[in-house]
Image (cartoon, rainbow, N blue to C red):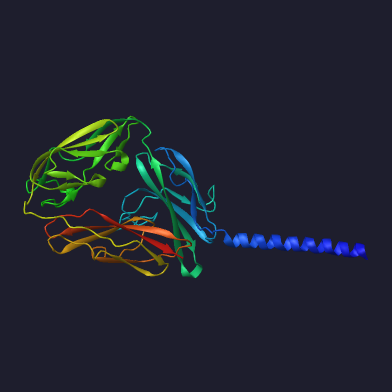
Length: 354
């Protein structure tokens, strides 16, 4: 009798241990974060060599029904103004697809990915997965990482890709910079570098190592991000430097010299929204020191492309896409007053949650 009781107690204790273990495992699984479609290679912040080939990998996790994954390269601050498609369309520019992964590729939905040979500085790798919904068509989810692409070889020369000398204003201005005929106008100069691997790369941004200097800040003032603002009439010399190389450009400015303070853009506060909701981007707090009316320009610089409505109004909007986990979309706002002065860009981030 005593032996039977002892055996029963041992068996009962084993059952309780198994029960506790099962309960612990269940609780641990519930507490562990559930991830969705994610780029696992290359990793965020990785350093890649231009012109090399790497292996792209993604983790599908709970996103079932994925048909294909398209990969795109963008500069870190490059505006997403193109359709993300691998077919030829009329009336719009098509983003070049760097790679299309499917279930047949190795690894699945990834594969060999070519790092652009002319890339330099921070680059965004955007992966857009197409998910089948049967008769309801398809939907997409995305993930993106930012990697750094240093030049693989030495910089041999740097130059301005523009007319020389550069005339800005009413006397023979270059059409490359649009309508630049007023104080306060902001513009960018295209800078290219020749490298010893015989590749010419665009290096206009400070992120690519380029810095700017104006010999006469009362004519052209250097702003953050490699932007230049016209602040007066006269002549100046713009000098750019990158990796020990320099180039200079003489600029003659002859614009309408009516005094004008530049406007200030305000893209509103960052926000979190739910998938499927209508999101409004609010630039109503943007202002002009002289109280003049403003012209607005919204653009998207992060996330898979959304259809941005009323992009030239104070309030733009878009429909928050369906996401499996929180994803961030970033937008830029620039405003211009009636006299042609521009604001510095303002940014807002919208986090879309499931």
